[in-house]
Length: 102
Image (cartoon, rainbow, N blue to C red; front, side, top):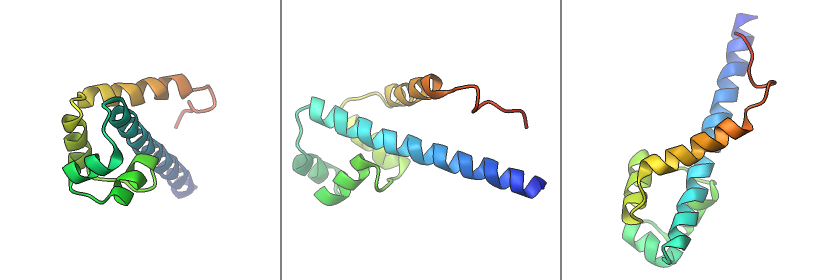
C-alpha cells in the first residue's frame, strides 16, 4: 500500500518536472523570437542542429541545465526570470485537488 502511494507521488513529480522543462523550452523560443534571432542563427551559436533546437523549444527534447543557462545568457535573459515565470505559472495552476496530506 505504501509502495503504491509512493509510486503515485513519484509519477506525479516526474510529470511536474516534465511540464516545467517543456515550459523552459517555450520560454526559450519566446525570448529568442523577441530578440529577433532566427532558429538557424541561434542553433549555430549554441552548437546544435536547427532540428534539435526546435525540438528543445517545443518541449520534445530536454537539454542540460548548462545548455539552458548558456542559451539564456546569449539572449541576455536572467535565468532567475525564467524560474520566476515557471514558478508564477505553478502558483496559478494550484487548486485544492492538488493539495493533499501525505
